[in-house]
Amino acid sequence: MSEVEKTFPSTTSQQVVHPVGRIRRVDKMLISAGVLVFLTSSAANVTLVVENHNLLGKVKILRSQQMTPQGVSLPPLSGVDQFGKPILVDFRNQTRPTVLFIFSPICSVCNKNWPRWNSILAAQKSLSWRPVFVNTGESVTTSYLNSHSLQQYTTFAQVSASTALTYRFFFTPETIILDGHGKVTSEWIGELSPEVTRTFSQSLSNSH
Image 1 (cartoon, rainbow, N blue to C red):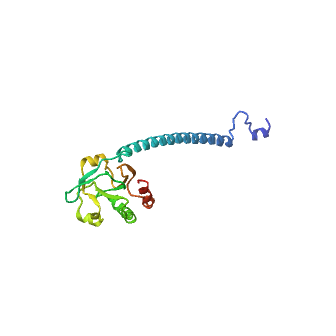
Image 2 (cartoon, rainbow, N blue to C red):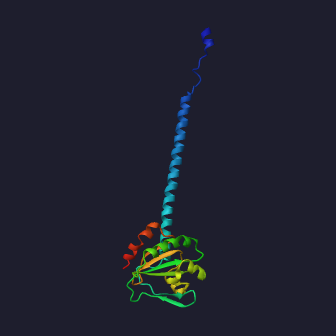
Image 3 (cartoon, rainbow, N blue to C red):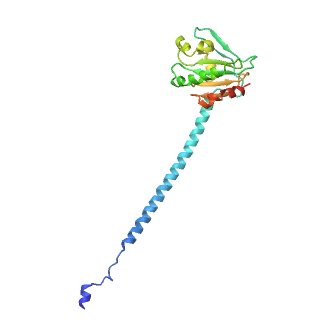
């Protein structure tokens, strides 16, 4: 055997793996893992979207069942004022709409809504509609009524159990417009938005 052969031994019996081949196999594995993660994540997102859609549907149904019945003439509201004197608000021979402002002295969101209601009352000083305030919380004090100038309006310090159930007074604050026949035409739960406050006159007009 020549010296050249001794200096450079033969490699025909060994398999040489080029580094580039290893890199390509690793890249393919990473890509496959990435695709699997993407598909798994996409499937989870689709499932989540479907579950959220179903949940929103159930919430809407539950909420509609707890809101004031619409499309039917409601019976008179009955209760007492702060002095225990009986009050009855009915819709017989009534041509103007009635607006119910539902509140509670311990309702923190109601405190945010009072400026909206006061804005509506100030802008709608007219005999074309009838404002009625309804307390659904604990006993209301004279100082509380005075602080919101409620002495000049029909105000229920407490409504009868039948009225509370019929009108479904479950939320505060709540604003309800009824037409002259006692049918609900508009209803808002929670703090009124500036847009609703600004267009409230139009909502009243639609109730005539």
